[in-house]
Length: 354
Ligand code: F6P
Image (tube, rainbow, N blue to C red; front, side):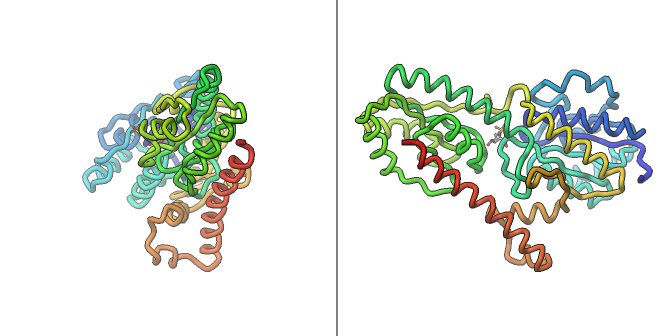
C-alpha cells in the first residue's frame, strides 16, 4: 500500500443523484483503511481556493438517500489555467492530500489528468445524468434522472389522454440521447428525436394522423435538448398544424437532475467509490473507474478520453495512432457498440409505438 496520509474527494460538473453515495463510499472505505479524507468543496474550485474540510465517518451519515451533492459542484474555469492548477496543487500539499477521487463527467476527467500530471494521483468516477462517457456503459445519476422523467411523462400522458392532446417533452442529456430514447420507450412515446439517429419528421406526422384516425387520443413525443428546430415550442406548433392534434410543449430542464438516488445509482456509486480508494491506495493514478458488461473495471484515463473523443468526432486521426493495434480495436469496438445501441433502441421504439 502506498504511504497515504489523506485522500481528497470532490464532485464536479453538473450534479447527479448518487454523487453523495460516492462521497460516502470514498470516505468510509478510506477510513476503514486507516486513511483520512478531505472533502473538497465545489469541485476543483475548492482546490483552487483552499475550501476543504476533513470528513469523518459521521459527516457522511444520512446522505445515502439525498440527491445533489453535500460537497457542492461547479464547472471551474480557473482550474484550467496554469495559476489555477498551481493553486490546486498547493492546496493538496498544504493539507497532505496524497490522492484525489473526482466524480463527474468528461470535463472532470480532464481535470483529473491535469492533477495527475502535476504529481497528485487522481482517479475519476463517472457521475453525470447524461451517461455520455463512451468508455463506461453506465454513469452515476442516469437511472435516477430517467426515473424522474418517466414520472413526469406519465403525468403528462394522463392529461394528454383526457384531452386528446400531444405533448412534446424536452429532456436533458447535453448532446447525448440516452435519457430521451430510453424514457421514450418506457413511456410509450409515439416518437423520439435524438442526435444519434435520423429522424423522419414526415413519417411521424403520417403515423400520428393514422393513429388518431384509429382512435388513439394521447401522444407523447420526446426530444433531447439542444436539437435545433425540435427542442423548441415551435416544434409543438408544427405538429399541431400538420396533424390537427392540439400539442403542448414541456421542458423538464433541471427537474431531471434532482431527487433521491435510485437503488441502481446508490449501489453503483458505492462500488465505484470503494474501488477508486482501493486503486489509489495500491499506488495507481490517472485511472477512471467504469462499468463494462455489468462489471466494475478500471481504464487508463487517457485511453478512456480518446475513446470518448473518437465517438464524439472530436479526435484528430493521430490521437488513436499512439495506441497499439489491439487497443485501437478495443476503442473502435466500444465506439461501434454505442452507435449500435442507439440504432437498436430507435428501431425498437419505431416497432412498438404504433
Ligand atoms: O451534464 C448534465 C447536464 O444537466 C446536461 O444534461 C445539461 O445540458 C447541462 O448539464 C446543464 O447545465 P447547467 O446546470 O450548467 O445549466
